Image 1 (cartoon, one colour):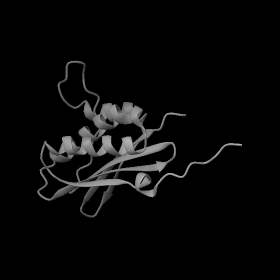
Image 2 (cartoon, rainbow, N blue to C red; image 1 turned 135 degrees about the vertical axis):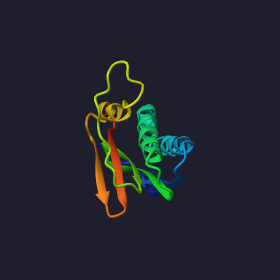
Image 3 (cartoon, rainbow, N blue to C red; image 1 turned 45 degrees about the horizontal axis):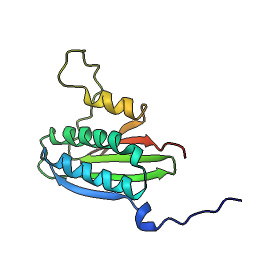
Length: 139
């Protein structure tokens, strides 16, 4: 018979940050993701999650919006973590096949690879939310 362990609700709660559209917001977003994954004891996801949130925040910064973006990380299920960035632009991200020598347009391809295709966009009246799901390793 296995015992269940109660996890404090503060640990299971999502983490959110409202950030300016500035390049340095990526480092704030990485810290948010790193700390929350540490709370959830999901250290194996940190590197991939930091790359993903950096890309999503970087794309939001390029929109030129003047308000704020919202970065969020939450447990969707016991096996899945979702990182999302909501920005004020209705321009949809496009996955581009960059050539071997290309110096840009590789970010969403990286998100595609790290999430095994589990990412997407939810448009709304005033912008969009781009989300990426990471699988929690078994055990």
